[in-house]
Length: 73
Image (cartoon, rainbow, N blue to C red; front, top):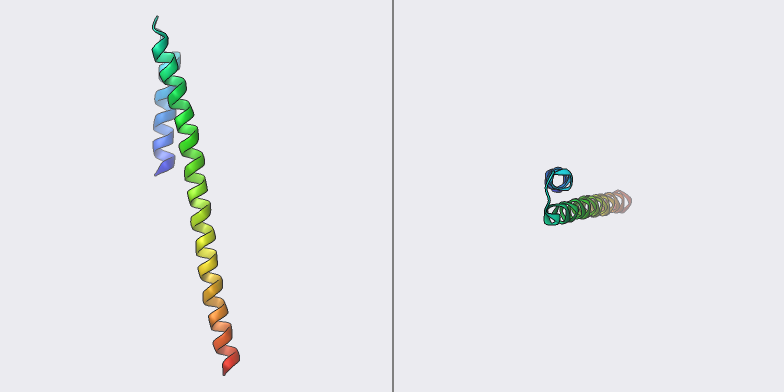
């Protein structure tokens, strides 16, 4: 989800940066959108990494419980 939003924001930002206009506001907003897209991409990557770590912890806990049950027999 974060990747799609960041790609759309990045494309919009690049469009605004290279838009032929006399107003500096378009360029500023374009750079702002590019920065927001980069932050969204970093945040999305971090959230994916945290989810993967959580899944690995849960799998390790299940494996430990199975090993304990096997040992208890």
